[in-house]
Amino acid sequence: MSTLLVRYGELALKSPPVRREFERTLQRNILGQFLAAGRTCRLRADHGHLYVESDDPTEATRLVRRVFGVTSVSVAEEIPTDLDAIRTRVVSWADPLLQPHSSFAIRARRTGSHSFTSQELARDLGGRLLTQWPDRQLSVDLDTPRVELFVEVRGPRTYLYSHRVRGPGGFPLGVAGRVVALVDGPRGAVGAFLMMKRGCRAAFVSAGEQGTLYGGTLQRFDPKALLVAARSEEAASTVREIASETRAEGVVLPLQVDQFPMAREAWGETVLFSPTIAFTDAEVNSRWQEIAELAG
Image 1 (tube, rainbow, N blue to C red):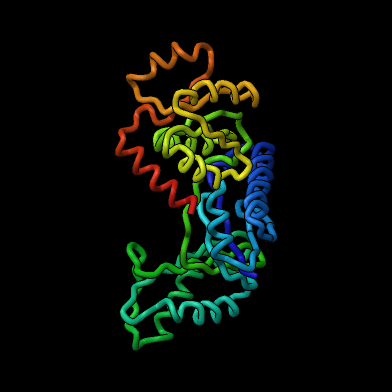
Image 2 (image 1 turned 135 degrees about the vertical axis):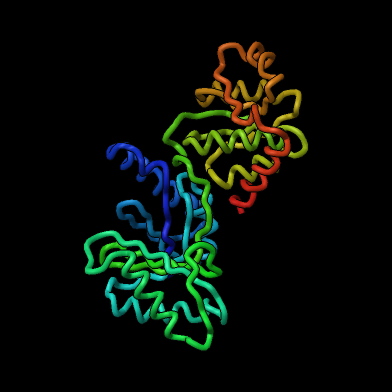
């Protein structure tokens, strides 16, 4: 079994009761991704991190990085927190990563009570790597190293990893309200994504030739999300219908600034969200490329 070290950001700033609820929701959403994919995993937590154990770290990373609230994921090696064991394992772990003339940095972090500080651990391990292979002519570069080696000591367990894979961040799905999003292209899709990132559950009404493609990509972030295809001329009425059926708090529309007054008049008292209203088309397309990459 491989271990994924899962980090989350904004929700850690909440008050303890709210944080606990957000963390429970985040865990449910991670498990939901695995369930939808027909995969199994083990999930455990400590203060500030989640740990996902899976027999397929590549697939597990692909699933976890789709979960809102997750800021980054690393495939990590887990070892006991024993200084001699850490020293020995870091040397063998770093061996294939440090090619001749490589620059490197040890990024050490520590949580809990130990006989060493983070800085002391980094200096100790860095010095050992420099003397281990003198013929490789390695160098330490703390600013722009070619290789970063992360050593994270968390109580009785230590985690070694060399890469971080970005997640969507934000809040876990389900901690805010429900919305219905009109997805007829990248502007609508990016708007829906940004509302989901704030914790909203979204239903998608796809319209136009590309609508279903964009909506299907968004569904990867929430396998339970409703996706309804509608003809362009019927899309608005379909959004209204689904918003009424699901008791949504508002609708998400792909508006630009000059379109808002007319939309405001047409939708009456309905709450309108348009997170991309100030985005240029180039900014929308760039943001969508990032979203599609996260979706895998």
